[in-house]
Length: 306
Image 1 (cartoon, rainbow, N blue to C red):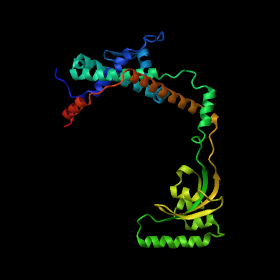
Image 2 (cartoon, helix red, strand yellow; image 1 turned 90 degrees about the vertical axis):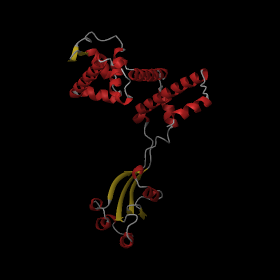
Image 3 (cartoon, rainbow, N blue to C red; image 1 turned 180 degrees about the vertical axis):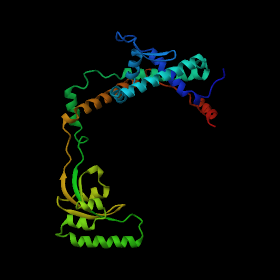
Image 4 (cartoon, helix red, strand yellow; image 1 turned 30 degrees about the horizontal axis):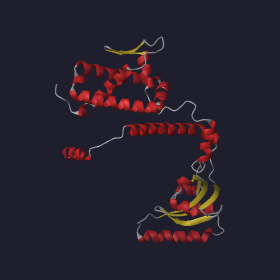
């Protein structure tokens, strides 16, 4: 049989690797593990098979499947089809094709690599301790600060960057008229009559509460030194000119440990896993330092470059 182009292989290879992984699943299973759940031709799925397929899903996908009977049924039907493909490939002798064997070996090495690294990075069950969580929380105060919140209102005059001179002139006249009415005037009433964003104008220009991260950079800079009740502007942005009133400012606050405890534990465990993996790689590298013949590598590169 002649080798096949690799672009024809991925779907079948994935199915073969999946079946091979399933065949290496632990033998221990509940008493009813042999119960037949689904069948297609000579291919059968037992309760043990389905359990293994579900367990192999990412956490979010597994929760979704277990919460939706229709999704679980679709998963089982998909697995039956995958196994039918594998059996058909085996019956044809396809898995003995040299290009398939090479791809299977690459997949096997990759699975072994990932599995062994994951084994080296297993984090102890008791990590982190509550004291370690508190220490990490104390060290991360600056990074844990939530954005400041701003309750704002605005009067907006539309004039895009690059607008014709006549449009710019008309916008500047409107701005000048608004400036003349702002001193001692009713901002909400002025916004209703002058702002060019109808939905905002109908509410007296009230934007509600806006987090600092959502503010346009130019507006954020203009509000930095503003006092509550003050109107700043006109502020030029790419969209137009803004008069912004600071109704209320809620300073940035650090999230309470109780609110982010579980997230911190998960983050510390991920960090520890990365540290364990890097430590293992460093020890392995020191034990068997790589050596590359740059001359021969250069020759090889020359033969590989089109």
